[in-house]
Amino acid sequence: MEELSLRILDLRSPLVYMQTQTSPPDNHENYTGQEELLFCYELDPAQSSALEPERGRLLAALAFIGCGAKNGNGGKTVSLPAGTYLFAQRRQALGKNEWLDIAVEQQKECLKNKLRKQYEPQPSLYVRYLFEDGSPVTQLFRPAKNL
Image (cartoon, rainbow, N blue to C red; front, side, top):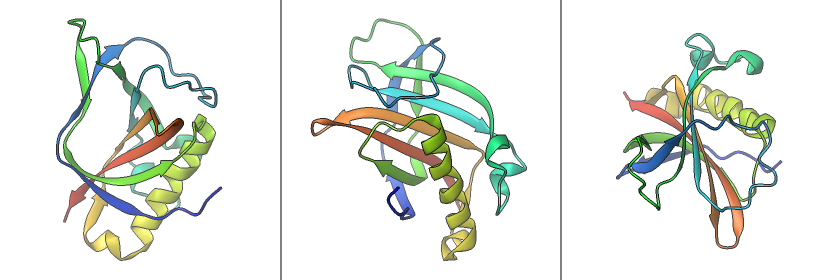
């Protein structure tokens, strides 16, 4: 796996999706890019602030799933709100085990390095799948409160 570089992203506009009830598969390695997908997870409060989080206990609950709102069929919308995020991206469709490893490393890096004095990771995680420049992409957004 490529080395993680901790990045801060200032998302200026929300990304809006149509809420769906589909359950998330553990593996998106075969993601074809027909629709963008957004998963929002609530994180366990104790694990989400731990320097060495227990990987298996980090995710508390799936808050919602959104899919591309291109059609605008009048259903309920959900969003990745505008704001400041710890951000990671891989140019491939990652399964849950792989992106969860990245989320743990992202949290550890933030809490260990100097960014800890500027940003505090919040207890939620957004995982976005999209198709860009001819290949699938997996993005992780962890809200970060400016201190």
